[in-house]
Image (tube, rainbow, N blue to C red; front, top):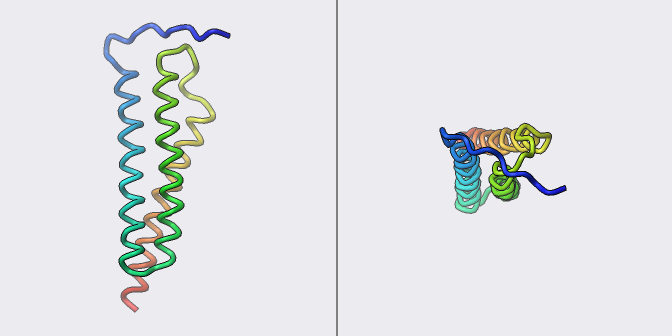
Length: 110
């Protein structure tokens, strides 16, 4: 099946959507790297492990945002199962990072 080019939106909505996915992916990567660096700085195995998991999640998000940008120009559906899974991955990554920071903060107080 040959992909058919999508009619271009005069308001540039697909381009804004693609850019927002890229910004989300790269900001997730920055947060993961900060958590990882913090883990090495404190010598915390928990932060280091969660940092590596978050970096892996971020890599998947970057790949997905790149693939999604390619899909925007074809007639493929934008609301797909992959899109829903990616949104879940974003939430899981942010949750892991938040929990790691909270646990480390509580342990530092003790």
